[in-house]
Length: 139
Image (cartoon, rainbow, N blue to C red; front, side, top):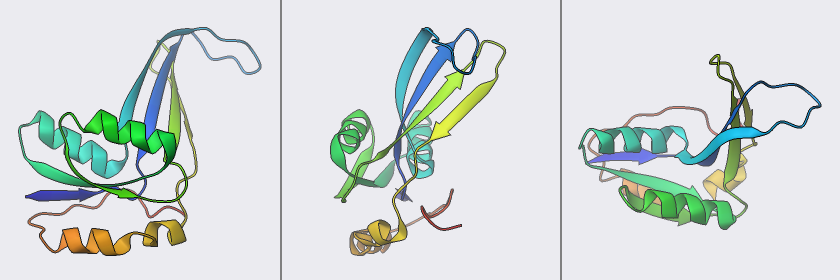
């Protein structure tokens, strides 16, 4: 069993625009919402390749509930309720391929440690692991 741990999951909204002009009102051509975070992305890629995995997902607030609901249809999860709200990120995509990303700050180290025991317990059953990204709040 491959187990992924996403310390800083997100809801990623991509908005397609004709062009980006600072200070202007811009109408979106299209928009979509995806679950995000390094471990979430690994679990989604594994699922797309018919490889079983289990994702440990800390989540909080309405955004976190939406993230869990979006993943529930295909990802086997261990969900860990935490204080605060799951972050949201916005990507503005232009037709020429230029993207502008705006990422909300993630949880701080104290919030990540809040449910560390649950993650450690799940990790003891681990077959393969990978680590991507950084611990929120640490550089």
